[in-house]
Every structure is written in structure tokens, then in C-alpha cells.
Length: 292
Ligand SMILES: NC(=O)c1ccc[n+]([C@@H]2O[C@H](COP(=O)([O-])OP(=O)(O)OC[C@H]3O[C@@H](n4cnc5c(N)ncnc54)[C@H](OP(=O)(O)O)[C@@H]3O)[C@@H](O)[C@H]2O)c1
Image (cartoon, rainbow, N blue to C red; front, side, top):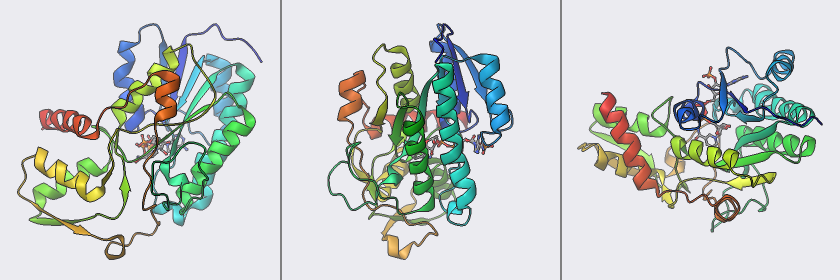
């Protein structure tokens, strides 16, 4: 293994929600040189291109924000999901080990089956209920198997000013419709991607690097229905939000009923204090509002 003297942070999947938030945050960290790679510039499944990037940049850190994130589509595209979320991550981890690059990889609450009734710890048994979750679990396993120094952050219900997400879809529907139906029997915690980006940079800039799995989301335990109601309230919409069950709202991929993540480990290890979900949602909605 080589020892890195570089201050380069390579970010893959930079056109997604998290990638864009890291781009925005990068100016607050002038001690690092960020290099952002969109899918177009660096498709993770092109192993030769990935290899070349390592040779050329010899990064100190790699933050992997690239992923196959189409949860329902993954049911019929298991191979593609496994290739990007699984095998490509395993390859990144191997190369990171070889080049002395510290890897931060992002995973999901969907590695759990949803039968828990209290917040899930990093060490709780995994059992994904859909193909996306299985592909992300494969990525976790290959990353840690190939490079035990990898930091994996499991997160949930990610939204942002950027990209497609629940918050933006709700705002559009609330502006278009008199009433909407939202499921109230799936319980979790939302994550503002800007907060996740900050947590990542707190880890990168700390001297406490310790490989393994860490949970991160905003604080709070809610249903999608609660989330939609708060969005409705914050945008001052008169749309009626009806509570429905998962049975009434079938999707190709099954979702875990309960996937609240316990964040004790990330708080204790890196002194990261996740913000409350309402506070962060307000920040995102104000930003979206200012843009209109
Ligand atoms: N979104 C959520 O609710 C959620 C929940 C839990 C965990 N996560 C995890 O959090 C991480 C960040 O998610 P996000 O919400 O920022 O996702 P996102 O907005 O969907 O961004 C993912 C990015 O990956 C890129 N990508 C897809 N296939 C690629 C490939 N073969 N090579 C290189 N790049 C590729 C996409 O490119 P295009 O822009 O061209 O599509 C996109 O820009 C992911 O690991 C995701 O699994 C997300």
C-alpha cells in the first residue's frame, strides 16, 4: 500500500443529490482539492476508466455518491443494480486499498427487512426485502471484504434541493391537486443530503478515521404521511393529504415497514450531531422557494 501525501478528494456520481451537495459544500474546505466525476465522465462500471483515474489522481479520499437508485426498476434490472451498487463498489475498495485512498461509500436503510420496532444499530442483522437493498448490501460486503478501512454510511429517505426526491414530488403534486394519498405505515427518518454532505466532510477532516459501518439520518421518527403533512404546512398549501396503507399503494419493490437508524455510533466516534428533520426540511424548502 502506498502512503498518500495528496489532498485530493475524488467524488463519483457528482450529478446526484449528494454529489451536488458536496459540490456546494466544497468551497468551505479550501484545504482539499475536490475533483468531481459525473456518470458521464466516470461510469463506475467502466473498470478501465476507474483504474486510469486512480493512476492519474492518486486521491487521498474517494467519496462514492454514484449508485443505481431506481428502487422499483431494480426489481427487473437486478444485474445492472448489482453491477453498479455491488461489484463496482468492490472494485473501488480494492483500488483504494492499493492506492492508500480512504473510501467513504454510502449505503441504505433498505438493507433491513423492516420488522424491527426500535432504532437499528449498524450490527443488527441485515435482510433486504428488495433487489435494490440486496445490491447495496452486496456493495457493503465487497467493500469491507476488499478493504476493511472503508467507511460505509447507511442513510435513509434522502432529499435535497437537487435531483428528484419525495419533497420535490410532493410540492409539485400539492400545487397541482386538491388531494393526495400518502402511506402512513412505513416509518423512518428523512435525511437532508446537505446534512449528510456535512457529516461526510466532518469525517474526512477529522483525524479519527475508523473503517466500518455508520448510520446517519436526521433526528426524528416519522411516516411518509407525516413528512408530506409537514411539507404541506411549510409551503402553505391547501391540498388535502390522505393517509393510506402500503396495501392500498402497491409498488413493484417491497419497502421495509420500519427502518429508523440508530445514530449513536457516528455521534460517539466523530462527534456528529444530526439535526432534527423539521429544521432541515425547512432549510430545504426555503431554498426551493427562493429558486421559484
Ligand atoms: N435517495 C435516497 O432516498 C437514498 C436513501 C438511502 C441511501 N441512498 C444512497 O445514497 C447515495 C446517494 O444517493 P442520491 O440520492 O444522491 O442518488 P442520486 O441522486 O440518484 O445520484 C446517484 C448518481 O449516481 C450516478 N450513477 C448512476 N449509475 C452510475 C454509474 N454506472 N457510474 C457512475 N455514476 C452513476 C447517477 O447518474 P445520473 O445523474 O446520470 O443518473 C446519479 O448522478 C447512494 O449510494 C444511494 O444508494 C439514497
